Length: 115
Image 1 (cartoon, helix red, strand yellow):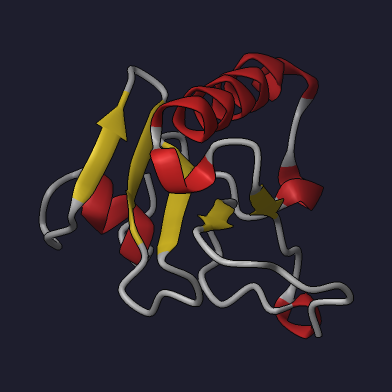
Image 2 (cartoon, rainbow, N blue to C red; image 1 turned 180 degrees about the vertical axis):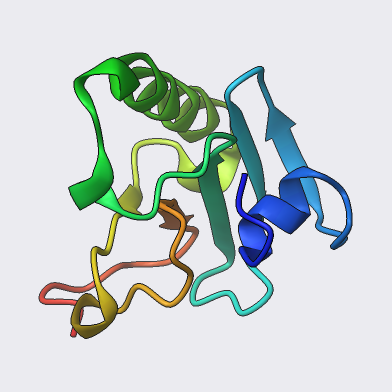
């Protein structure tokens, strides 16, 4: 955990969030500035700054993030068969919070390229 990380503060409960799903290693909550009818953030509970900071030992966390994304994609009607997973690395790619996270979005037609 990082004392200055907003997502770590959400994990430890000092900042409220609208939780959707939680496992031992992963927390899922609604984005406060959604870009689609369904916009969820999937974060590892371990503080990992970005994809570039991943270690070989983090493989189980990445696997669990994708397992949870798959589970939500099947169980949330608006996401079934039509959703996008986005992972940004670095400020020029749009990463605002320095805690690796997945955006799971859906519920409307998504265009490509995104921006």
